Image (cartoon, rainbow, N blue to C red; front, side, top):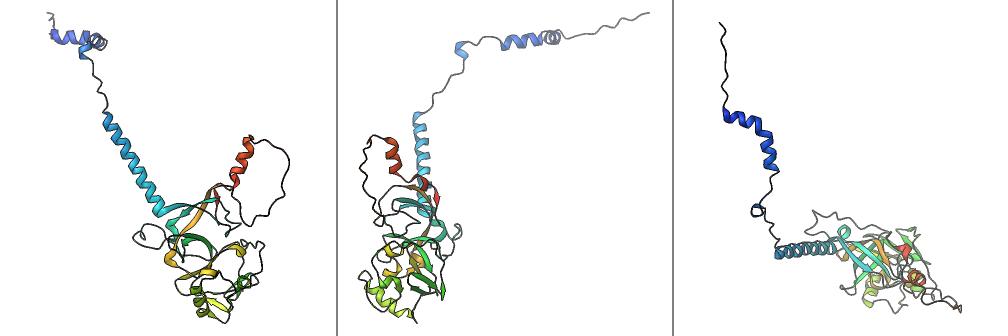
Length: 285
């Protein structure tokens, strides 16, 4: 006897299984009633302005930190460092390398002052003024200049950077130190110190002090005129010339006048004469 087996299926489940995909498709494709559409919330204008001001403030704070502790722009006003630095050169200074160690000593990589490097420092005559010269004498060095040749500790110093622009003869500059007060530009106070720190015709640099010279030896007011520079006065090291304006120097050789007619509206000629383009981003050393 054959027994017929019948399976009972839930009508609701069968309907879902047979019509599931179609139902899902119809639901997804069904148009959305305007009343059920997602509303776009307009942005708060005041919040956007606040974010912009906050971002600007952060940028200003970072810029002030960099200019105060890390880098500082300066411009060369005189010919005392020719031909390494020219009148009109704009320098970016590295303040983090040579600045006197303080609260930032554990963060910033301070370094010792080295002979032959160019540094920026507070003027011994007026602390509000900044000067840029080359380090020649370190603490304990014996300095002497004979016919313009610098000698350090009895040995001639190699100075490929030194320039000697024409000038009137000056025994004080050519033979240093001296016991004859022959240059009225020498500070009287420094003259007394100079005599005290001179031993056997050589200037002895005291502890914590440095002797500076300009590269343009005949046209530089430097340690020969106003004395030593304390370590605490040295603040920065020039990094790069980021801009250079064409500016005349008192040591430039005057060129003969040119009577040829030209065009004042020649833009390229004005641009060429406006700046020293080849000096842009020139590394200082």
